[in-house]
Image 1 (cartoon, rainbow, N blue to C red):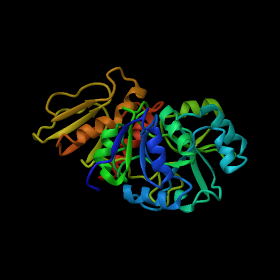
Image 2 (image 1 turned 90 degrees about the horizontal axis):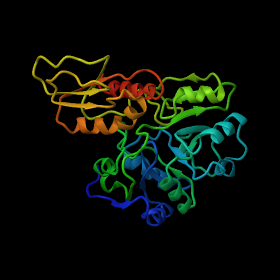
Image 3 (image 1 turned 45 degrees about the vertical axis):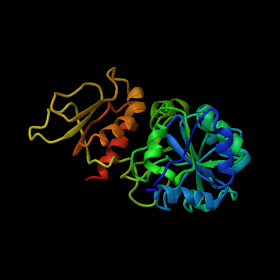
Length: 325
């Protein structure tokens, strides 16, 4: 990890400076409605390579390209299949990433050599203002070291990446707190490649039946789809329901969905006392960051109800646990 610190600027007044950094081939971390992204000029292969270097991200894991407006999609890639266009019209700006054919202007490093590209329009005004001011599409995975917890606050970015990024735009905590849903709608039936902040029920309501492809342990077909991912530095284990306090006196942490467990844990985080999966998703990574910093030897994480964005919460917890088992 790089030593030193990036320049941290307010997201509302630091746009011009951050846009200049992007145009010059530098890296800018910025808030979206999902998590903070680590952005580079998507038309510049050298700039995109810096993302992989800063994150220690393997070159086979593709990036998401961010646009300022839905109308920019056809300007970049040309005509898209009707289902793709319909989903963009319905859900952009928003936490939906769509798979399209990669245009020649996008260097292969951005897509890890794939002929397809992941693209979205974020539902965060400062993010879209940054992209417009830069005047280029922005490739931006989550602004963290590869495989670790996604950042939902500027301080998570600073702690995780240090001076590997030139500028961090601080827009406070992100609204959704979990990554975008990724959908490939180019075929006869849309395929969900990654569960995320756009609930499966909303997709089905918009387009009818969809299929869900599980995470991959080989070459990813879309960003963030590796079977082991999103992990804290502390070993994590997923459990069903509240667990009794550990009898051995060990320093364990507990991530609860709704109810606090019995006393005896060294650290406890409750995602939603009201039992709201949307609130829980927004707090997920922030809570895991705190548990990871609490000095516990293991984190027990309670699964969320498997409905709405609760599915995405459980997806992230399973992938985090897979890193340790």
